[in-house]
Image (cartoon, helix red, strand yellow):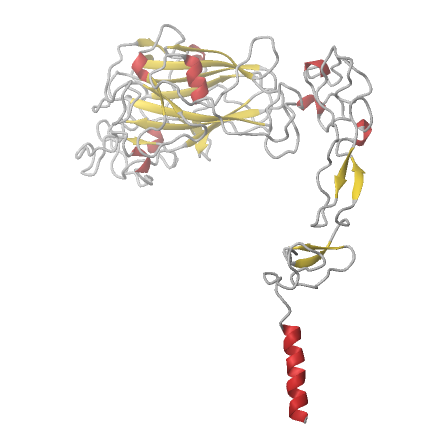
Length: 499
């Protein structure tokens, strides 16, 4: 008898243990055991009051599923003011409130229609209470501290900074920072300087008077601002070589003291010798030279250039209105030269400059000579971006082969700072040139990706000059890749560092 009783008890226990699982609802057909609070995880397993069924588990809910209530997600001071009004939200089966359906939130004021769209209590007001140069009728969605924390930084002249949960540019969407998409379909041999602004990911244009940020004008010249450079000294590419691809958008800009092309390029075509005289001669940027007392700067301890002439030069000049909320910008830059390794620290070196004219007087200060393409070492020594970065322990010239450098004009210790030749692949600079300085020498080398930054004043018009040229002669070419222009809401440390 005891044995029969024990077996019976086991049978009852087995029935309890065999309660259907979340995937077995044969006894409660039609129930979703992952979300049904009456059959949560199993048929007949009901959640307690104020619990919801989430993924087959009972959890405390914030509302009773199916309940309704009034709602409004805008600033409380704008509720039922002007065009703004609340809506209703419904508690979902998860126990969470759904979207506030039917509400109308403040938007930029549209003048002349007798409607108070920004829900300020006054229709068609055309005021600029924060003094940022934009009135409500001009699209300023934040004109007082009642609207947002920093009204002078929020207006149609601002850029939408990432991650601050603010609609900085008043376009109706918060944090809508998207990748640049204005640089598709650009001709590789375009001569239009505005195309090169697009290749840098400067997608917006502006006028002298409209107050919004963007490129106002662009032009080509030689290094001193005169005449026109050779067409082949500039190009827009989807890549430089096999591994140097855009850091932003879909294309990058190239400028060169020879042909702006890699081993597989056309329009313009490649020069395997990396030594294409472009037959242009000019002065160097006059204000930059004047800042150095009439001579050209050089890396510490290196030979001075033999002349102040810019051979085979090309310069892109951009006039840009700065967003009202920006304090700095950055560019991705990458410098390549066929002067490596033989002519390191010699009088024959190519210059690459990024000259900024800005009214910024804050801290950190922009360089006195305006050139952002300069590396400042920990000991305060300054190195213009170029092949001479390979001389000392800068770490900025690292796409190369270790070994002797400067062997044509001087004796330098062998460099051990080369990290890779990955970014030389397919450029032509990766071609073996045994005996140039060492048995393992290549045709050239490069810096790898660098970040070049400068400080600006919100709303001002800056001038940015980006140039490259040969010094002392017109032989052996260098090339700079430029891309990924970005604004920032905080000041930067001006100059150039490893990306």
